[in-house]
Length: 289
Image 1 (cartoon, one colour):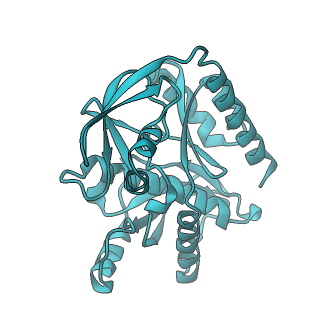
Image 2 (cartoon, one colour):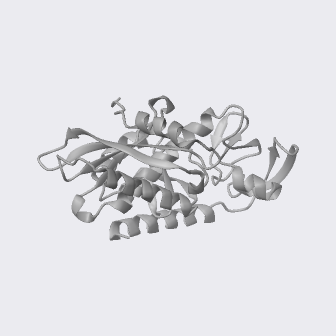
């Protein structure tokens, strides 16, 4: 782990601990779970208990398959994000009748994981900088992460794309938790002080969100996203980094590239031919907004 990444994780952990300790006197809330095997009311701890903790009270099966939760019928909520008040709670998985919000969360999480995979795969002399990842748009056929590299003429080989795909699969196999943390702009700037593009983006994000920045951590990878994210990396199954397109030259040394991929949850079986069609579709450049 690089020194800057180590410091970012130390700041994340310290702030996470500070916020937990600042909860103060523990207040009880009533969480009305709606779903199988039956509706039930759970008494939980305000600002401490999470939907995942609620799932633990229900069954091991709920813990294993719940990807996301829905609070009060319409608010998508991370499984590991503390609940703030009495509410109704639904636990969502990939085979629900209307999977739209789960699908968008899955793709957003894949983009986030792709950033981690890219950081793991590139050596320091590549001068990789994570730029950003656009909001999920399932109609495009691929999830995305934009990066800046210290090369203006890189054309990735098939073996390099396979290596990136393998990094994604390794992350999935580690069954890493997605942790959410809200911080102020000052702390976010300190955490990303070595990241040129994050520093440029933070003031605008902070202004749009009343001075707050939402961060996520998976393993040691930390990035900015409004979320929500899936609960664990294990929910990413078959995965392919399909293409990398050059978007623009940044300066005389660096260029902006768009990395595109496709993935399926483990529960979805698909034959080789059908998955190949998805891979081909994911190779087509997704235009910039």
